[in-house]
Amino acid sequence: MKIPVIMDCDPGHDDAIALILAYSSKKLDIKAITTTAGNQTVEKTTINALKIMTFLGAEVPVAMGCTKPLFRDLIIAPEVHGETGLDGPVLPEPAYEKSELHAVELMAETIRLSTDKITIIPTGALTNVALFLTTYPELKSNIEQISLMGGSCWGGNWTAAAEFNILVDPEAARIVFESGIPIIMSGLDVTHKALITDEDRERFRNTGTKAGVLVAELLDFFARFHDDNFNFGGSPLHDPCAVAWLLKPELFTGRKCHADIETKGKLTTGATVVDFYDVLKNEKNITLLYDIDRTGFVDLLAEHLEKLP
Amino acid sequence: MMNDGKGRPVIIDCDPGIDDALAIFMALASDELNVVGITAVAGNVPVEYTAMNALQLVELAGCEVEVSQGAADPFYTKRETAESVHGKNGIGDISLPPAKGSLSRIKPHEMIWSNACKYKGQLEIIATGPLTNLAEALLIYPALKEKISRIWIMGGAAGSGNRTPAAEFNIFADAHAASIVYAGGIPITMCGLDVTNKALIYEEDINKLAGFKSEVAKKSALMLKWYLRFYRSFGFNGVAMHDPFTVAVAIDRTLVKTKHLFVDVETDGEFTLGKTVVDTLGVSGRKPNTDVAMELDNPRFVELFEKLMNAYE
Image (cartoon, rainbow over all chains, first blue to last red; front, side, top):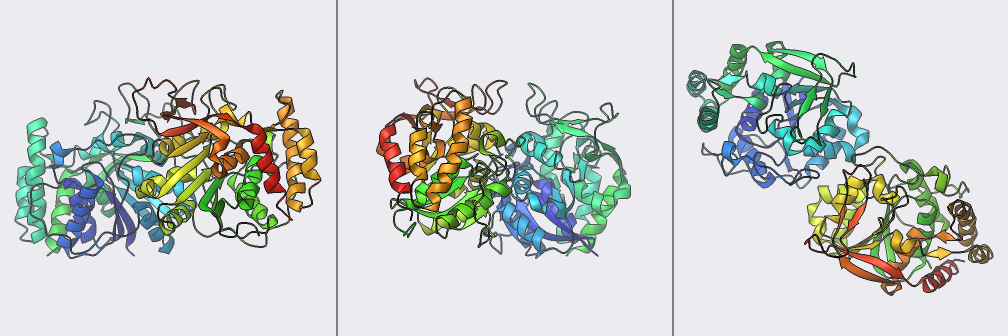
């Protein structure tokens, strides 16, 4: 049986690749896509999600989410993702309209209609998921788990302490992390090891599929930011980790931990404070992923791209 | 005939609550207001009670108004209730006839949105509890900003609080939701403690009410007697009619003198969590967003209250 999932995302280059990976997998059934503001404004990330689905020939419902974080002003990342949020490749115009429902309403409807518990895969700020949980607390028990990209145990990428997705809406993150729903956290600890080299990128381009070429073109743009700013020796594929864990968990190394979200720090707002050594002996609310079989991850991506048109 | 479709369309967002109960009775009896829905929120007591109380109150008044059960918990903080003020069941532990109807199947945000669309920008909200439901509605439907003509809020204070020295109960109970609503861009009239602590009725008024013919008036008098005990323990010689006064102002805005000021809600302070920070002198440089009620005409309020309660048969 396929795992029913809702993708809550802000495409975004790596979100787009996460969508493509999830769609191409026989293990996952994308029931709905909900969009969030972060990498770009929510109007732009919504159009991008529709374009990616149109490119794939899919018609998964896409619902637009919150225009800004719960209590804070919006931060966006055009320096990473460009003015459209998905600069680089040429994509088809959307072949269908976004849903008339708000993201949290589509989440509620999808979860109500599903006979099986739903897995949510958030790869952006957690605004929609938090608002969903506060508005529909009675549906919480129908969520199987949340496999998210966000946070880090050892250092941030937008401030020294905070990873971008959590920093955009720390209060939302706190609501989600305190919800009691099992969380699998693909933070920077693992995503910075999920590196795609120039060689891997050419391998995707040479799969001979349209999707392989698209992913390579997304990475052409994405790599520029990382090559200019960091010395990783590749581009970290953050968001696809949250999908890959569901497809092949044996690629990852993780540990159950307690994690809190700092919302009031002078230097640390948006940090996921992970109790890696269990000094507090608090309840374990996350599975922290912190290592990955990089070659296996690249193979997984390539194999899925080969199956697509 | 109560609430027969005459008057301006309003949704009452409330947590009955003794004074909420009286506020609902007043609104239903007034020809100025057409109560098109009630959304219940947790506050004075848990939401299972406030929603059922609202339904039973509406039925006791002989009306048919849809009641939607809303948020059980504040948006971001821990639950805060006030059983010592309102009794375990929220209405002074008096009993009402069991409800014949049932609660609405839709959520408050849906009820607010559909009515806002139906009444094309004319809908008003009277909010007499924590603002959780309204905050959720505004986050889910940002376009509500253009579709609600005014929110009448019982909440906050330019001066001192009643739940903490700085904060009034409704705002304290969900400061984060309040901050979203005050910043939401919809015109607000704020009836805070600055006026509602002076909107008093006394024992003789309550006794008079007990002598009215209707069951509504008799039950109201019982609730008010419970409430009076609480107020006397605080050194008040009457009952502060927070929520009924707010409905009264929505019926007749000449009951108060207001000032147009900028109001923000503290969500982080060590001593000031839930304080409505009212920029009385305009020092913040921020654009005013609220008509803050500063002075009231209490005798005229009591007169209106009695007139509406006497309308029940």
